[in-house]
Image (tube, rainbow, N blue to C red; front, side):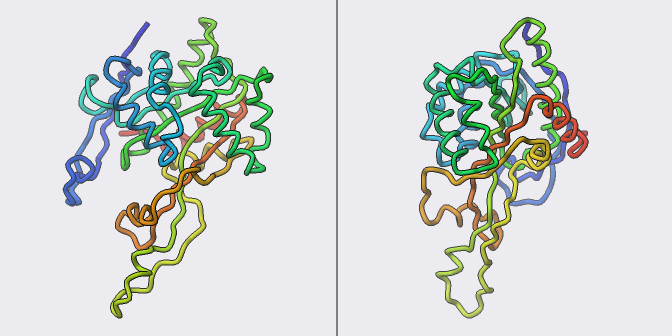
Length: 284
């Protein structure tokens, strides 16, 4: 039975996030949570998936992935601010990689994730779990949101996902996961190429590169504390030299995005979600 997620929360956001103005004024935005809906969410979901995979998004059939997500409308959430017929500002979903193992887009995702895991010892259990002969039920969690959408929308999405999985299991749906695999994004700061090329005497000393991992999604720092393994990885595709400076976001250093993988055993997932709720709270 389809349902509208009635949880509606108000959160102040910078006005420039909405209309491109540089004003520091804030506006109140009411967020509503909906089931994914094929008739209205396809294009908005594709845009968020491209953002999630960043420069590597061309390696996958994003349309097929969006269709697969929308084929299970009673699992996962979209977040909107101006009614059901508008594009989502955020989404969260889960796909059973075992059930969908014969689909080309899942095979491509599997190969991609295995290639990244092979470079990261903390993710050494992943190849065995995703092997074609494995009976493991790995749930791939995909989630993304527009920049500066507040993180307070995250706890309700994860909490509702836990509830929906239980409802699905009660109806013998294939969501009895042994592991959860969360695909996300991190970044590091890199020295600005623009600063290096600017030799004006009055120019401040250029920012040095910082190898510290920083998080687009602050909940990832909490989730990985409950993980069997996690790691960031470089994207397979290479951006142009100016890409890091294009993502400076009014700071001295450039930004180098990376992919991020978090592997959580099923028994640890609910405590991880509760920790996220405690850390972030809910929108008010």
